[in-house]
Image 1 (cartoon, rainbow, N blue to C red):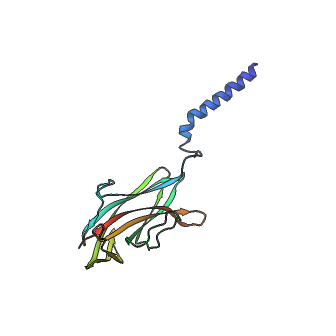
Image 2 (cartoon, rainbow, N blue to C red):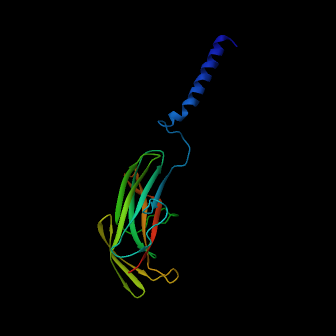
Image 3 (tube, rainbow, N blue to C red):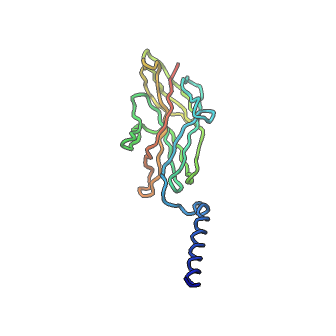
Length: 197
């Protein structure tokens, strides 16, 4: 090899080594292909842990949880979280068909979340009116973050688990730039509630 060929090999080698050395810093500004893109949705108990969730609830008592979203989509995302309330027989989202629950949302949160970051907010709820008639429970009104909602939802006595069960659940929706609307993002979580009077 002559001097010019050595110089070319040396320059190319230095360029390759400098790119390898700067890759961690470049990854902060340039998205590299690969990795799974997904979003997280969670509910934490009142102590900010995955425990001590409200369960046996009573009329006029206030309960709290934390709702959060994590973004691993490769870019900033605009999220919508619907809060819904149901009894044991009403519809949940269908994860297989990627369809949301047919129930109307009671409350919603919206948040822009940067890739690799998370968003979280407290949620308080309270049953304002409920009545029991033999083997059925009727919840008529609840509050979510101090906003009153008429729910008019019956629950039958569950003889196996000995209670009147309802569920407060959360659906994750993601803004789609193509359709310029929110689309169900096939993520949902919830907490079971045993209504006692």
